Length: 131
Image (cartoon, rainbow, N blue to C red; front, side, top):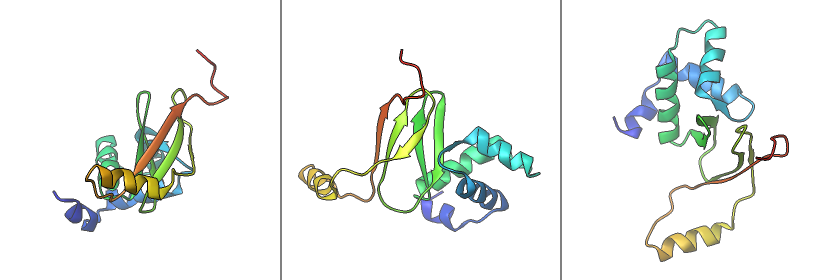
């Protein structure tokens, strides 16, 4: 199924996932989102939550960042997204992007036309113990 078709299809499950994702304060795991939906009385299955989240990422309506044990998701606006992510607890914060001109010039030198970009910087937050 193409992204265009996925973007146009509005199912009750997709709307429920979008609503909860938008209501979340920052990044959330699919499991946490699924539990919130269950707490509201929704019968959406975990596999459906994953499928809907990935479809939202595919069409640019959600961000996904890798963390130990899986991914975290967040509703997003179109465009570039930049995060500093703790490798231990998954805390993610928005960061200022590198200069847009640098991104586009680097891509152009490589023969790539930028349509969107995501930048994740990984480390360990101050709340997590050092190894």
